[in-house]
Image (tube, rainbow, N blue to C red; front, side, top):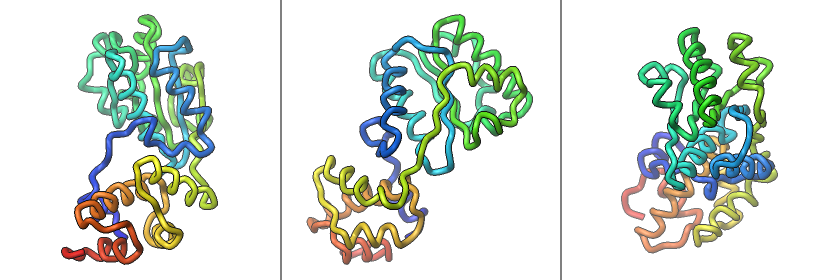
Length: 230
C-alpha cells in the first residue's frame, strides 16, 4: 500500500464530525460540537496529540460546522499563514482554527497573541492544535498561558484493538460491509493511522461501485497493485 496511490485515487473527503471515528474521543467531539454551535465558553480551545490522531480533521470539522450555521470561520494550516491575515477582520469571525501551533516562530506567536485578544474582546473562539502537550509547547509564556486558559484536551488515537470495530462501524454507516480478511489486510500493509485507513476505504468503495463488485480481498489487492482492469 502506498500513500501516494491512496491520495491519487481517493482524494480527501470533506472533514466533518460525522465522518470522524471518535473512539475514546467521544466527549471531545461533543465539546467541539458545542463550540461550533456557538455555545458559551472560554475563548481558547487547545487540542493536542500524536500525529495521525485526528487533530487536523477535527479542526476542519469544527470550521465546517460553524460555516454550516451561517457564521464566519477561518482555518490556517500553520501559524505562519496568519501573516497574510488581518487580525481585525479575523476578529469578526465566530471561530478561527490554527493547526500545528507548536511550529509558530516569533512573528507568528505575536500574531497569535493579538488574535487571541481580538477574538476574546469580540466573543469569538480560537481553536488550535498541537503535536506536543501544552507544557511542552515552545511558545512564549504569555501566549502559552492564554492558550491554556480554556479547554485543553488530548486527542487519543485508536489502539490497534479498537480499529477493526471502528472500520466496520464507519463502513456500515456508508452502506457497505467489510470482511475480517479485508480488515486484516488493511492493518497489515502500510500505514495504520485512521486518516490513511479511512482514505483507503473511501477509494475502495468508489472502486467497488465502479467495478460493480463487492469489496473483497482480491479487489483490494488488485487495486493496491495498480491493476487497471478489476
